[in-house]
Structure formats: structure tokens, C-alpha cells
Image 1 (cartoon, rainbow, N blue to C red):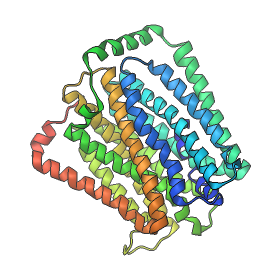
Image 2: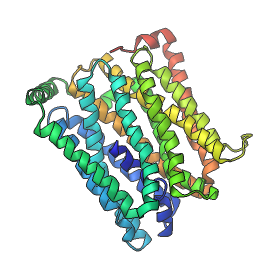
Image 3: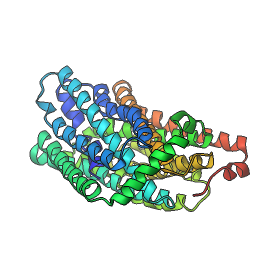
Image 4: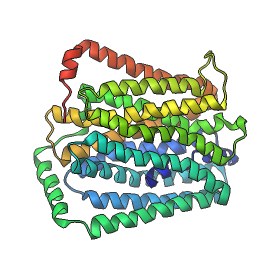
Amino acid sequence: MFAGAVVSIQGPFFPEVARSKGASSTESGLVFGIFEFVKFIMAPIYGKLLGGRLNMYKVLNSGIATTSICCVTFGYLHLIQGRTAFIASSVIVRFIEAVGDSAAVTAGFAIIISEFPNAVATTFAIMETFYGIGMIGGPVLGGCLYELGGYSFTFSTIGILLMISACVIYYLFILNVDFSQKDKAEMSTTDNNQKNDIGITKILMIPSITLAAFSLFSATSALGFINATLEHHIVDFHLNKFQIGTIFALECGTYALTAPCFGALCDRIKSPENVSVIGAVFIAVGFMMLGPLPYFPIEKGLLVICVGMLTTGIGTGAVFVSSFTIFLQSSLKNGFQDDVVTYSLASGVWTSVVSLGFFAGPLAGGILDDLIGFRCGTIFVISIQISYLVADYSYRAYKGTSRYHHDQYKI
């Protein structure tokens, strides 16, 4: 939950602080995006190492501790004078923070899957719900804390809360863990690693996973686009930081509320790809209202933007949960062993794709916002969603509907 807050907390006010230093929307997008680019690189590496060399509990704890320290540090970077120094230091701190966050997220997903192998989508959705609550609380709490105590106070508060959670995790999972279970998990990962040498490329070459990765990238790039540019888009409404944070929270709140429903659905149907299709449609419609889309018969207004955020949140919940389910089910269907090694690598690859989208979205959003504005920039996100829908339909037409369903493995 607090890790989600760390990711989203700066949305309502960091672009304004960066502009006060003379930075452009593109440079603000780089600060948002570098965090996810590092996770894109590191997540599959952690996924592979968790298969036999690293203890999941210790990786989870150290990752959260690193993230919390970087969060507090980030809160004092605004004291640096000069655009170049401010942006460079922000990028460096976010780089280190991303290393810790990718470790925590990958280990957390692997632990959840290994504990609940028969209800992967449901338990993953529960975990994503708490992450979504953090994403909700990040902008709202961040905007409130910013109004109350300023830039440093905001990041210090969230960072300290995250450090407290790291201490609790250390106490529960390392000092007082059931060592018989812990040793069993470590032996399982080490033994299976010798007979299940799998890699990222091998997983991504599975067609259903390739499509799921495309769907996931499309959804996360949309969210990244919003994080980097929405504050600038609604600046003419003259809202305070708390109000801006509340608007950001609409998307995350809807996502958190709908994710468990989509998780239960994915655990019960044979084709979670259908849920991904629903998600892409909702995201595309949401962005048509956020702009709104040029030549769309709707005027820009706060109510329309709020409805667009809610619609986008529903689509995000559908895509996130269904894609994770497809990653695991298709891996098992195509011969990978049902063990922690596969769980860890599938989790790492999924997290990597998420991060790639969150890197591309803010970067593209910042550039498009500078060049053509938010409204025309939404065409970029809508086009990606349509591209996924075309690719999914083409694959179904090529394989045949009955065979396509037959290929889906049911846990």
C-alpha cells in the first residue's frame, strides 16, 4: 500500500515544482519515467534470482527499506538550485528507489503466488487492491500534506510510514517466520532451479503472453501519460493540490474496487483474454473523455474529466488482473513447471512490462504535451488500445475461436 503511495505521491505537485526550476514537461516526464525504466530492467533479473539464489522474504524487506530511504531523500531535492542539478539529482534518487521497489514488488508477487497457487487471480487482485489504495492515498494524502507542510514534509511522512512497514515485515517474516516453511521454500526454489532453467525470451515467445504483454503495456502507458500530464491539463480549473490529488485518486480508486471482481472472474473463466479486451475498450473510452478527443462532441469540463478517470480505472483493473493470470496460466500450459521458479520469473516479467509502459507513458506524454497539448496527445493512448484490439482479433481469427479457447490452461 505504501509502495503504491510512493509511486503516485508526486503527481499533483512535482510538475509544478519542476516548472519553477525551469524544467519542461518532457524533463518532468523523464523523472517519472526513469523510475519505471529501471524497474523494467531489474524486475526480470530479480525474478530469475528469486528462483534459487535469493530469499524472497529478505528481498521484500530490503527492497521496501531502500524505497523508503529514497522517498525521504527525494523530499529534500527541491532545495537544490538550478534546473540541471535538480533534474539530475531527481533522476539519480528515483533510479535507486526503483531498484528497491522492483525487488519488493517482484518478491511480494512471488510469495503470494507460492502461498495461493489455486487462486492466483483472486489473491493477486487483493494485493493489487492494496497497491491501488496506496495509489489513491498517494495523490490525495500527498496533496493534503503538501498544503499542510510543504514539499519535504510530504515525502518525509510517506517515507517514514514505509520504513515502519519495512520494520514490521522484518519482524514478521525474518525474525519470527516459521523456519520450517521458510527452509522448505528455499529448498524448493534451489532444487527446481536446476531442472527448470527458463528465461524471459522463452516466456514472451508464447503468443498469448505476447498479446497479454501488449495489453499490459498499453494500459500502463496510459496511466503513465496521466501521471505526467494531467496536472497541467487541469491547471485552468484553479484547483488546490488536495483537489488535484482527489482527481488523480478517482482512477486508482475505481481500479482498486474493481480489481477483486475481475480477479474472481479470471479464476472462473477459460479465457481471461476477454477481460483484457474489455479493459482496453474502457481505457480508450476513458481517454476520449479526458481530453476530450478532438472533434469529439463533448466540451472540456471537470465532470467529464472525472468520468474519464473513473472509466479508465475500470479498464486498468481488468487489464492488470487478466494479464497476470494469462502470464502464469500460459507458462504452465506450455510446459513450465508449477513451482516457485516459474512464479518468480513470470512475476518479474509481468512487472517489467508494467514498468516499460510506465516509462514510455510519461516520456511520450511529456513530449506530446509540449508539442501538441494534452487533448491531441490522447490520440496516442487511444491508438495503442485500438492496436491491441486489432492484434487480439487477428490472433483469434488466425487460430480459430475454438482452438484459441482450447489453448488456455485452467489452474
